[in-house]
Amino acid sequence: MAKYTTEVIEKLSELGFRDTFGREILEIGEMYPNTVVLAADLSDATRVTKFSEKFPNNFIQVGIAEQNMMSIASGLSLNGKMCFCATFASFATLRCCEQVRNDICYQNRNVKIIGIDSGVATGYLGVTHYGLEDIAVMRSISNLTVISPSDCLSLAKLLWEIVKYEGPVYIRLSGGKNIPIIYHEDYEFKIGESVALTEGKDVSIFATGLMVSEALEAASILRKRGIEVKVIDIHTIKPLDIKAIKKAAEETKLIVTVEEHNLTGGLGSAVAEVIAEQGVSSKLVRIGLPDKFISKFGSHKALLKRYGLTCSNIADKAINNL
Amino acid sequence: MTNINESKIKEIEEKARIIRKNAICLALRAGKRGAHIGPALSIIDIVTTLYTEVLNYDVKKPDWPDRDRFILSKGHGVLGLYPVLAEVGLLPFDILKGFYHEETILCGHPVLNVEFGIEASTGSLGHGLSIGVGIALSAKIDKKDFHTYVLVGDGECNEGTIWEACMAAKKYRLDNITAIVDHNGLQADGFTKEVMNMYPMSDKWKSFGWQVEEVNGHDIKNLLEVFNKKNKTNAAPTAIIANTVKGKGVSFCENNKIYHHTRSFNRELSILALEELGFKKGDIW
Image 1 (cartoon, rainbow over the protein chains, first blue to last red):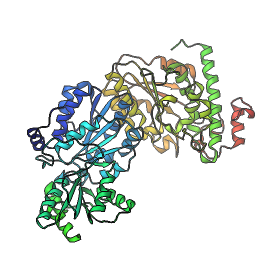
Image 2 (image 1 turned 180 degrees about the vertical axis):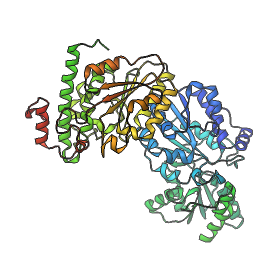
Image 3 (image 1 turned 90 degrees about the vertical axis):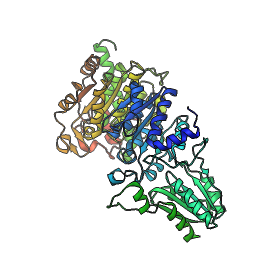
């Protein structure tokens, strides 16, 4: 594993999530000879073409057949392979949901599923390509670890964590390049352990994926108005960091969740479950994509803005609910 | 594989007879909770032949990495698998007899358990062949010689994923996988010709580049001959279209769709079935 200097971190962030995955998987293939990468006609999009050239015997191209990809990965892993299946988040989680559940998770296989361009990252491509329900679906499948990195360093580092773990994992990625940097220095991430990025006594914001960056900016806006905000990076949706949520609910009177996902069943729902069950009282405000299919399309950034997935809206919501 | 001789055929036939009896006992055990007896009776000759004479495995070391693999993709045919595994010594009889008792580990569809000879969890149709392709690919990557057999139903071939697996197996020249189609012509809703006509089944597999053999799935000699032929060198996967009778061996179950999944297997019916198979009512357990 290369050292993650500030220079490397900046480079990765410039390239974006897809290329970060493409870069790390080459090294993972080097380090773990049992790595097999599978593609369903999206090897360029998922940046595994270089892997396929470097390790042709450990690369399986199944064509446009995501269900087959998942089941084949299950079979490969039954004989000791560590498989990576990469495709768009929507296809990886809905198209082949049953294969993921029965063949990978039920049989507890060592298969890592990479869902690129989740949320509304595909913008003008439309709803068929949005990953709106993947957190809800994947967090309800037993045995599955669900990861949602906030920046490229966290993706790279978490990739190296999941390869140490023999079992099924889903990594939810957003799209685009020039990803805002959350971690400017190398950081040792642990699966299931959230990261408190700021401390504050008034509001706790739990965010995941790209929304962590917006949450941090919201915190600066709020700080200028005298409101102290704790921002927590939920890079692991499952297993969820229950302790951190309970602590936040005890220490701050308002909890805000932010996610680029349907409000139903996502991070906000998961946090609500914890708060309700732990018997701690704290007001909860959930920010996410509305539970309806959009009919007017736009760029990723424009869609995030339209649905209030921005620092200013997060700050406004916090102020209005305090 | 040993040479085919009459005594070997007789031995397998006798084993299959006992296994049918035990499948009936399991159906009786399930009783009103329901059992897929028809789809089990159609595969018992095939599965018995495989485990007796074809598959290379070690009962004392079930996780031996070089063992041949068998996947029952039509997982609802599990009453045609558990008694076979018990008969050959992979599955302890006391566990078999715990079938459908509270907290049994043996449910109505196979659950991955290498110790007891179950290589994959199946039940939802159209998954097992792809899993088998993955196993066969891993054998190619590791340069291992073991063979993977996957038994699919003819109704199961309605599932599009079967054909996704077919494409991949041909593309990767998997001469180390054999799909056996239990071609009994009946599925849950009726005759396959009426529900979703897949005839001619052989042509479909051939058109995907598989080498295809047709066989009488209840003729042990015929099955052994075809399994013997498996290793051709044209780098293609093999499909064996096994013409079978759903419910085979028990006259009132044969070609009768109500025995695809039945809740009516009571003691009287079980005794009738056992007597047809040449057993006495005291042989019921």
